Amino acid sequence: MILVVTFPTIARLVRSIRPTAGLKPVADGSRREPRISVVIPARNEADRIGPLLDSLASAPGIIEVIVVDDESTDGTARVAQALGAVVVSSQSRPKGWVGKTWALQQGIVAARGEWIVSLDADTRPSP
Image 1 (tube, rainbow, N blue to C red):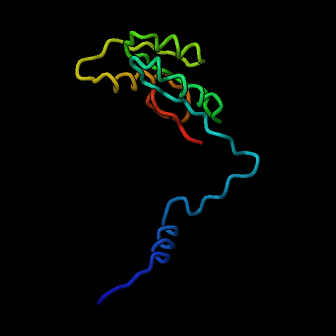
Image 2 (cartoon, rainbow, N blue to C red; image 1 turned 135 degrees about the horizontal axis):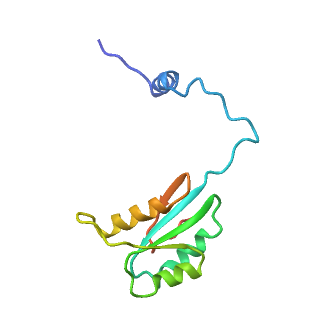
Image 3 (cartoon, rainbow, N blue to C red; image 1 turned 180 degrees about the vertical axis):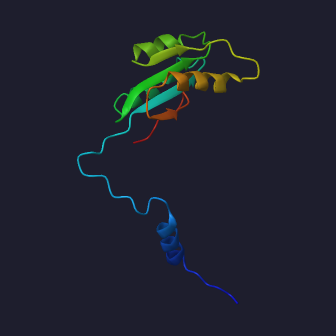
């Protein structure tokens, strides 16, 4: 026997068995933007980090931008701090850790947001 099931039928089935099927919508007025922390690991990014920090300054929901300065020698921390970022100086890397992942770990520990977004210093989010 061959069973043919259309996509709408599958979608209805999934909706009917998912755990959120019985939840009620959030009442108007009780919604709020999530609190977002942005973590940026950076090593020698002084020439590139400015445009990213400028673009994040007006983004909704962001409560903090954390730049983890991973032993930069070009003034990355100074530039980031001047543009309003919280700067975390990277601690000595434990055995087995790689530089970028260790920097991210330190930024995540310092973050206070409900959501944490990680960005590279040479990127810019689009609207």
